[in-house]
Length: 119
Figure 1 (tube, helix red, strand yellow):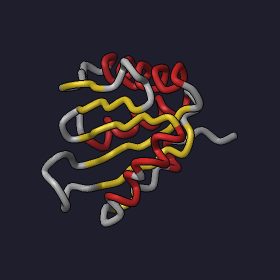
Figure 2 (cartoon, one colour):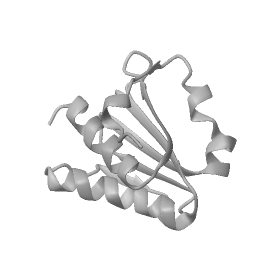
Figure 3 (cartoon, one colour):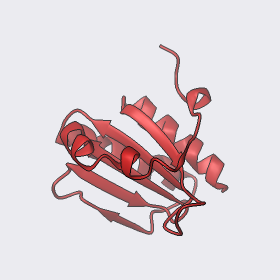
Figure 4 (cartoon, one colour):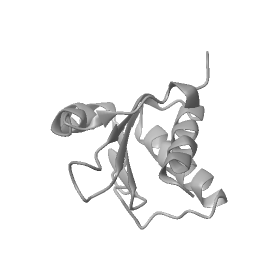
């Protein structure tokens, strides 16, 4: 499965579960950590866990499992590492605190509008 195909599955899963302010940054020219960061926030600890669980479930259906996960205990920031894509699921306050979009501002924003449902 290509990175673009994984991105589509991830964004659709997050959107389906009402993830807020979904952002995708291409960072392949900046680091060897990953090619893309997906950043999203939830409205509660339960919502954050639901967003992470849905992402894992939808990619798992395609045979893609995370290399590692972190943060399920606190559920204020859950990280799902798929190697080429790292998904950051935040509580709104934690997202504001860490400001990954600013830290990785040299990355390229990816247009995900075609993956989002129209409301």
